[in-house]
Amino acid sequence: MIKNITITLVAASFLLSANVFAKKAENKPVGISKGVMSVEVINHGKKTQITRNQDNNNTIKQAFAKTSRPCPPFCIQPMVLAPGVETIAELEVMDYLSKMANGDKTILVVDSRTPDWVKKGTIPGSINIPWTKLNASKADPIAIGDIMEEMFNVGGDDEDRDFSKAKTLVMFCNGMWCGQSPNNIKSLLKMGYPANKIKWYRGGMQDWEVLGLSTVPGK
Image 1 (tube, rainbow, N blue to C red):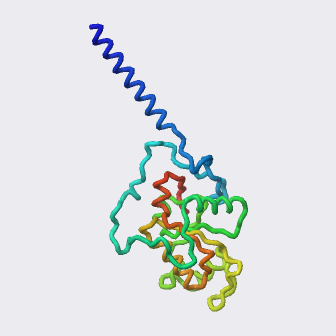
Image 2 (image 1 turned 45 degrees about the vertical axis):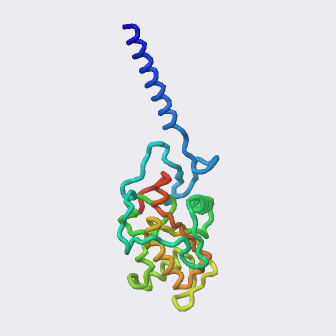
Image 3 (image 1 turned 45 degrees about the horizontal axis):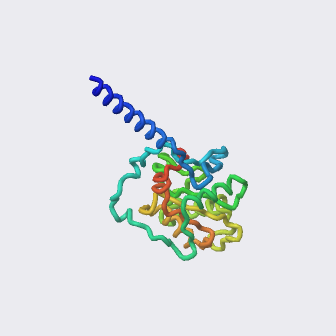
């Protein structure tokens, strides 16, 4: 009888220790980088924080769990999209967003996806300009000109555009299998936009979600 009680107590103690260990593991902080837990950005005029999901058992959203989307159109994109266009990752995106939050008006972070995707969640501080809005075969030239002038700070007209004060554009879409931001970038390059003023976040929402980074409903 005493032996059975002892075994039971030992087993209970083991389970308690295991639960405490698991709880501690779950509560380990998830930073963005060493010494950085959050990045403050401006999202539609309001301050917000980009952090990582603190649940150590969190998994990726179902919308980004699929591995085998048909190609075409969902083909793997190259690392270098075009000469002069820099490919960047999450820390660089957040650095640009932080600069914007600190008053730098020469930068714009652009979500190139269609609105149905953007509504599911986007990067805080970004704006949505669907790839169809800059594609000459789908959009009105006047509307494209308005975007270039009012949002990208490009002067002149279709025949003689002035890119001397053009904004640095950080463009992304759903990830390395998505063609929406590449389409936007290629359209801009055809219009003469300086390649060195275009940054491409190739990983897009796929990698953003994999890392558990904050998202907001898009507008």
